[in-house]
Image (cartoon, rainbow, N blue to C red):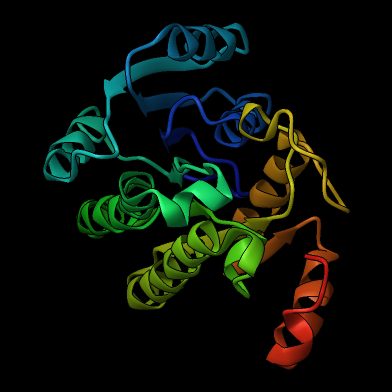
Length: 251
């Protein structure tokens, strides 16, 4: 169970090699003994992530998870919960891809939509069923500011995150009466392997800083947070810019 100061004793990371997701797990592991389940494809990166967490004193196990295999997701969730209740579940997998390729290459665009939206909905529904059975828990859904108002520069990715946001914000409302909380986290540009080689956007941040925002939000039971917080004001302004002007902005 999550203790009186908001720290869990168990965590599931769907996307077990996600740098932001792992930063969240490491943040919690530094606060109290933590049992972590990493769900991802078997790989050297997954093994290294597990060892790093064990070095922080966490108990770690891994579960094979393929985001594209939607039919397998209920079984993955059941296996993840097989050793008992999970206090915090983090949905942290996704594809960024080449923005121009995604709308011109059918296979690439469909794959992004399936991983970023369909797979996220799939695990969300499976998680909700399991969390309702245990009667408690929090979900952290890692989204992006790109989903708040979709821009021409990355509209395929942005549209998948817009759908992701809509689903997880709605899931939070559906689960609220049962004492289960969902937090959507919208980071801006984050320095990770996914963004390596890309030009950093304004207010670029790090996985550790996003993790702290997420941890604080779970503790405060907030529904929606931005990382860094200044993005809330920026996106509030951009959301109301008329489309003829919006399309001329260098974003």
